[in-house]
Image 1: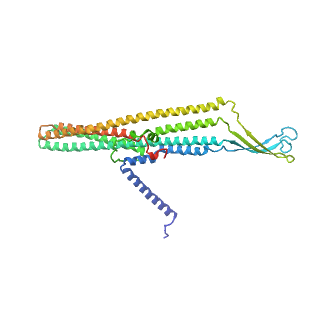
Image 2: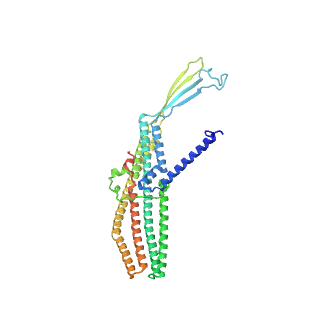
Amino acid sequence: MPSTFGTPSYRRASLRAHSLVAALMLASVAAHARETPVTLDAALQAATDHSAAMGAAQASVRASSEAALRAGQLPDPTLKAGVDNLPVTGQQKFTVGQDFMTMRRIGIEQEWVSGEKRRLRSELANDVVDRERAGYLAQLANTRQQTATAWLNAIYAKKAVLLQQELVDHMTHELDATKASYRGAKATAADVTQAQAMLAQTQDQLLKARQTFQTSLIGLSRWTATPVADVTGEPPAPRSYVSSLPPEELREVQPALVAASRDIAVADADTAVANSNRNPNWTWEVAYQQRGGAYSNMVSIGVSIPLPINRKNRQDRDASEKSELATRARLMYEDAQRQVDADIRTQSTTLDSGRERITLLSNSLLPVAGQRVQLATAAYKAGTGSLADTFAARRAQLEAELQVLDLQRDVSQTWAQLEYQVVPASMSVGQ
């Protein structure tokens, strides 16, 4: 019986089998990546690597870089060809080479732009590239800021789930103990019913907390561009260094200020180009003219010079327009600087106040809530207190812990808005 090894059908089947194995391996790797809890640094890196907005901003930088290379070049020359003085009447009409004035012409025309003008145009194009880079930095800062905020939402939602789960476990244990006491005639049916009701309410709160956690993971996945199944790690300490940056350093890493300063540079360069355009460009032309065999051929050389007879209302107006736009850019920079300064001061004040509130609640509210639970539990075991008081104390303790957790989340989000509004120095336009 002939072997099927090496036949086309066998090779196709083998290829499909290998493709299937490779696909399964890739799917397994992807699934493992999705199941791995994501840290803050990993989320920031994934968002930076996969951001479509940042990719679009990078494309704008590349596009403007291409335009910058073109800006300093001379215009393309023009090839000119034609027939001069062609007869249209008489015996020689529409003939070439019989009349002494008829010439076939071919030439080159070149607009000449001075080296100074080309230098100014190149500087303008390079400033536009820097402005596009500032736009990229703005997208980078926004991506990092939104990603950090989403990760903090997820990590605190996870902490809330753990607190709710702890309370459910406690309520379940209390329900079992109450049922045992009821069987031993030490608790009433009302106590069992109340314990069941409290457990049901706590379970509902747990489901709500889990829903919030899953929603926060979806929000984080929007920025990482990959599914996120879990998060891990502790939120960074809400300590700000942005508020202590000197103005000269802040303007190099704060995208709004970087963009505003680049707008000034572009406006100034555009004004310089407009001023240079007050002197028109000359156009040179060289043509070779061929006549009939009985006549000599000719060469013509010419120059075209635009006459700015209305410079006051054309070139001067253009230069004045660009100058006013430069003034506008400077005023907008001042406004952006005031806005950034106000935002930093507001966020820094909110951050300081939030840290004080966390310290106050951690040192006063939480210990008191814990003591209340201990006292209510001891009273219930001694027969001088009710089960309802025990549940109420435990619920109050959880609410206090959730209150502190919510405050910590708000403070962390304020910290993220403050710290991630700037980009690392290694990512600045200067680098």
